[in-house]
View 1 (cartoon, rainbow, N blue to C red):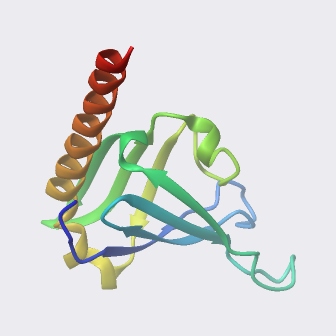
View 2 (cartoon, helix red, strand yellow):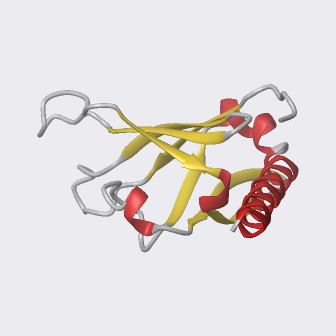
Length: 140
């Protein structure tokens, strides 16, 4: 596999409840063989501190769609659709595997690299899966 520098994106998912208790802070790390999604609930006066950090490893094959949403020529959000919604069902604000991630200012430059990187990694994953199937068919 081609070695690449990891792309790190810091994000937040706005709270869906009126009191703002379900706001999520997180980080996406696009590594050579998978995407590492780390998230936690933002601390609040009601809960008394920050939530526990949870990490999910997503293979590139699980990423169904990526959309970069721009506003005033800057990337503001990333919309990720995950093929298996069960992987991200515990994250507040995620609906049926659709993640609407608001990008922090410090990660906007990194986000420009995402579409090409994910398309390349997903095509490599699909090609590897086809090779495995062909090899299994030849061996049987």
